[in-house]
Length: 227
Ligand code: ATP
Image 1 (cartoon, protein in one colour):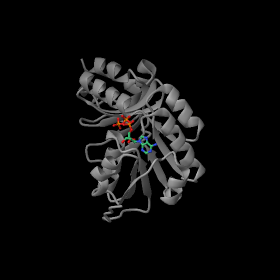
Image 2 (cartoon, helix red, strand yellow):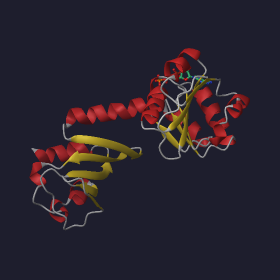
Image 3 (cartoon, rainbow, N blue to C red):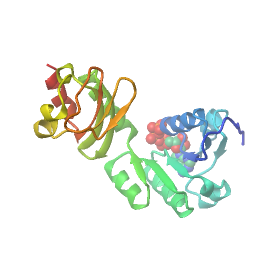
């Protein structure tokens, strides 16, 4: 089991299971940030490909309860399941939960997959391809779009550069909630300051980044205000 002990930061320890494009990228990024990462895959080639970059790498079938127990996964704070196949991903999540891992994040490939993962105890379910597709689409519509986080189907939080036409106006005057159903929950100022829960009198300045909550089509509405 090749291991590389690197700079350790914080106390959180991560186990990443299923080292496809998604899992490998999560494991590599956490390790680069200095966290302890145990990377597991049933395919020896996938394990070898990542072994030099993470703290520990092991070959195992994650649906095998005994195998996960002997790797000590119960000692990890967070587990990330990057397995695409529904059955193996669900069984792995179940095993991790039964072994007492505190927080389990799992990748889903469909809505049904998400529902099953949540039923067996996944704390967070992600859809990497769908989320990246949404980001790319928003970027195509608006070069001012910066980030996106789904709250619930159809609702999200987005970050974007305030349109020039907003500069000098306060939130009451812009009336985004009544006009578009958009709530501004924070304003990131040019100097890096974050104004959380800005009041109606907060005035938009040139270069402000708005953090907004609303429906998924909010960027189109904001873009209309840029014209
Ligand atoms: P990605 O899009 O992230 O590349 P994917 O959705 O195509 O992945 P798969 O390739 O099916 O998903 O699975 C990702 C990885 O999970 C593979 O490297 C595979 O070997 C591994 N994997 C699948 N089942 C298991 C299992 N039971 N135990 C451990 N690893 C597994």
